Amino acid sequence: MPARSVVFNAIRKHDGFQFRELQPGEYTQMAGRAGRRGLDKVGTVVLCCFGDTPPPQMILKNMLTGSSTKLQSQFRLTFTMILNLLRVEDMSVEGMIKRSFSEFATQRALTTNEFPKLFARGTKTLLKLDNQFKQDADSRIGCEDVEEYFFACRNVLTANKKLLSFILGSGGTGGGALVAGRIILVTSARKEKYVCTPALVVRPPESSKKPNSSSDDILECICMILMPQSFTPSAKDDAIKLGDLHYVGEARSRAFTIQPVKLDEIFLVSSVKHKIDSKVFYKEEPSSNSKGISSFGNPFAGAKPMLDRHADANPFAGMKARGKKGDVSSQDKSIILSHDAQLVDDAMSYLINAEEAELNSGQLSMLDLRECAKNMHQGNSAMEFGPACGRLENDIAFARQFLSHYHPNLESHYNAVERKETLRTRVNTLRHLLSNESLQLFPDFEMRKAMLQSLGYVDENDTVTLKGRVACEVNTCEGLIISEMVFGGMLNELEPPEIVAALSALLFQEKADDDIGSELPDRLISSCERIKAIAIDLGRKQKEFGLPVDPLEYCAKSLKMGLVHVVYEWACGVPFSSICELTEVQEGSIVRCITRLDELCREVRNCARVVGNPTLYRKMESASEAIKRDIVFASSLYVS
Image (cartoon, rainbow, N blue to C red; front, side, top):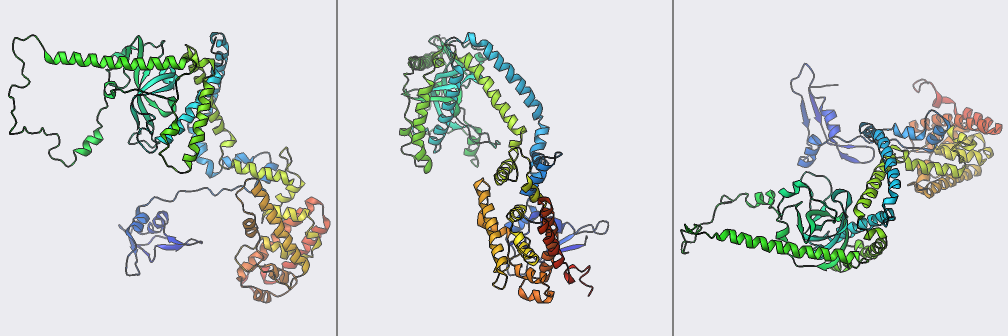
């Protein structure tokens, strides 16, 4: 109810497991009652500090201004739930999981993003691309193995990305692997229309992550890339000058471009390296962030330096003589341009030579990445680096065996394969998202169903057997343990008081002394040991099928023997005051356990009816009558 003021005498509470500070949502819920609507303009909240020092400021700040605890789904699959859902036709286990809160956000996103329509459209387009690719088989003379070549190249690109990311993880050029002047082979069929073409590194890799981006850093280097002979530049490329990104130029009758290359686009890092002037090919602009940082707090940032007082300053410096035809600056500029053209021509010769070496049965030598990483120490990853390099070399040698690798028109055929395979990957991803396999609890359901099939509760057609129908009758405790007890004939050997005493171990869940004692009958003690063996065996089965269950913990959680003696004496007619002296458990817990025992007796009686065991049916009726007496089942505990 609302009040004028709310007083907290402490900011710590016991949540049933341990003492902890109040969470922001709990504080808001209680402090929000301060201030009566229509009576108080302001509500007052008081935090009492019973001690010398107040609570730490960070704890108070988190409690007052922190974010509320996110709701987490507590939906869990059980064996009884699975068996009951398999018996009905209106609802499936997968449908139940989809309707749970744990899958609410996922299912809502699938509907909002129209994934079913995208999947249908993608499937239709993929079918057209496959048919078109088959029809164009006659045009791929000498390039018939382009599909196999594409998958081989994809493996190489993936492996190269992992290895280069590892050696570049410590910064720099990765031990000289991607230093300026290195010749590499790059592939970007759909975006840039080149496949396994030579490229010259003009700037080592740097991170291209944007300031507001949440994705991982993307390492990319700037390269001068030799374009295929079929490449034709567009009109918009003329506006870009040499030294800028995306510049397209020509030298030695071949086109080249300056482009950023990501690590997953590098097919091969060669051992060939040349000395180049990187500033000619790529003039990197200074970042505004670094300029702002360097000038921060400097009042003279950007000011021109004063001339030296003792220097001979020329007041006519920079002025041109009148009447002279020669222009020194224009001559210097032409010299610089001719020098840059010569450097570009030399770099183009390096790329053409690398192309000829690679087309000559793959003679372009490969750099040994082990030498680049020999001085690196990164734990267990360094031990796996050497074998990974060996696998990469084998993959590259395997890719070079295909005829498509040396085909002059490889780019067009490779692009067709990459287009349909990229679409196929996206369609498969959508199919997985729309299927039951994407459900968070679906693997748990598969493992539990496989275990039920191995124990005979479900057949190969997902039909619940007689053993499974017996387990479905039990909702009070673990149905599998009861079913194993019924089909094992264990309850047939016991008397009604002994039956309810043994069943009490499945219902009592409080911490108490599990010592059964030597005063009980030998049959009851033996039955309790057999129940423990059944629970441990079921826990071991769950662990074998991949469920995160420890057999001993499962047995300790499912069985508590603290009230076996108490319930046995109660069923034998001992007064309630006398059985309370046998244990330290509270009277209310004893009453609750015996009351639930009556419900469990009715469920086991139904199990006997399903199986067709009249002897057990009558025993369970007698057991229920034995515990339904006196104050435990009185209509009110206040009536004597």
